[in-house]
Image (cartoon, rainbow, N blue to C red; front, side, top):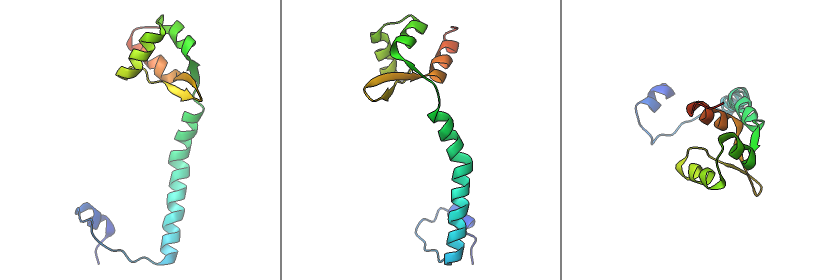
Length: 103
């Protein structure tokens, strides 16, 4: 009998596994616990991150609509669409300000 980790690390991808239902339930429970413990807090932090409006960002940087559009195309400052409105993550704006030696 081969340990599953050894099998996976070997690079073999075409194999079958037989597992008891009770072990599958335990595996599922552990996966859910891990997701709740690791993924959900990160998602929740991202969900509540403050968003700035386009005019707020233009004022902070002293730039126009065209500059923000060009920055978005270049990946300098990626916008977030909320409905039909454009917003920017506060963390992204602050990081760019720091890189540019701003406020």
